[in-house]
Amino acid sequence: MDKVVARKLRPHEGRKLKQLSNAVNCRRARIILLSRRGFCNREVAEFVGLSPAWVRVIIHRFNQGSVESITWYPFFHRGGGRASRFTADVVEEIAEVALAPPFQLVGMTVWSLPKLRDYLIEQGIVESISIEWLRQILRRHRVRWRHTKTWKESNDPEFEEKRRRIHRLYQRRRPGGVRLCFDELGPLNLLPRHGKHYARIGHVDRLRATYHRTGGVRYFLAIYDLEQDTLHGYPVKQKNRRTFLAFLRWLRRTYRGRGTLHIVLDNATFHSRPEVLAYAAANDIRFYWTPTNASWLNRIEAQFTALVKFTLHNTDYASHDDMQAAIRGYLRWRNGRRRITVEQWSRAKRRAA
Image 1 (cartoon, rainbow, N blue to C red):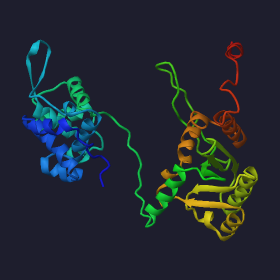
Image 2: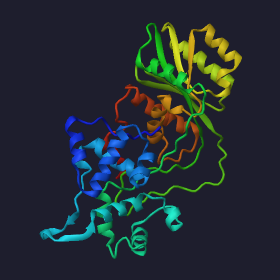
Image 3: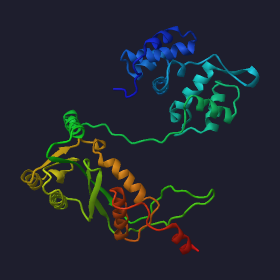
Image 4: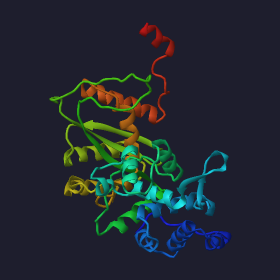
């Protein structure tokens, strides 16, 4: 099912879409109307003769604005009112080429503005065009550089049942219980990690190269408390049923007298060992399993993103103790147990002098 669909039309928007007369605008109006009728983006693209990527762009524009956001006119105009050679149809085709897979067209995995310009000229789409004007055209059509993302579709036959159970837990606080999210961060190696930070132009911090990593690995077992918005945990050398069972015992002591522990966690094999399930049943702990390849349902994942950014990026720790000290320091600030300041600025200036 398509994730991008046209929003519900306002009363006047349906009339405006049907009144569009320009050929390009009529095609865009058909995209919105077909999307509203339930056709998927690939089917809409076949009907109007465009690519699915461009259909999604038009729908995004309409959803973020109105009919005016997708309306296009026969010509661009330069200063002084002189009409440009780039008609609306040509501009539409330029944007569509930019959104097409480059490997299929030029045998390379990504476009650049010079390569896109050369391809447009060789194909006779334009006679000539400057790189800056090409950039402006793409920018006006909201075609910009974007990072790719990893995504996995869950093939769990019980996906919907598990998803609804977790969502019900998130939506309503359980009386006499605590809602928690559990996961393991790692493996954590001792190695230089790149990142981003403020720096003068032309200045680049350098990190050493590593070929041998003899410090071993650690795993950070963590729990996110949805009631108090706090993150806790501790490191272990291995993640298995023994360390997980020890963590559950620590968790039960930490939340002594708080009622049932409702824990969202993934379906790793050692999480469902008989001794683990027996301890959970005997100590008022209830598990909510995330579906296969659907760890994004576990809200602790978002907490790990910030933890990694502020404790591991731009680092080269000498030992696991130093790494864990940084993680503990971040968690104290994250949970509101210390202020942001670690050292006074005046003292830092004197030390650097």
